[in-house]
Length: 132
Image (cartoon, rainbow, N blue to C red; front, top):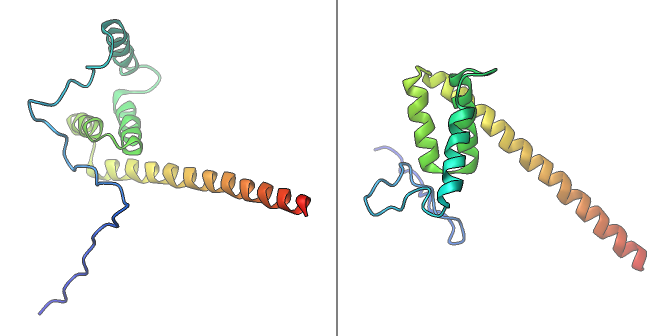
């Protein structure tokens, strides 16, 4: 008889998990519902412009966008760029490597914030020492 795996319930104060798939029901509001028409037009024009071939090809730009989507936690954005990557012929190995790069950047941001916290603690300790 196989060993029972331990339950992985999340703590009560943990944030809700991000849905694995984007919400596609008809009641969902437009992604741009809160943007003024002129802002939406300029944003979409900008988006189209940056995804044209330039110094970087489209596959590279989509890999960057995928990594950014992983970092922002927006499931619909992530799904959209993942779909585009697959259409461009990007392999699972390439997507896994892009994920590893995003993980490295995310980890580095934690280290950076840890450095800030450590400096804050040192400043607090120094201020307390000066008071005594």
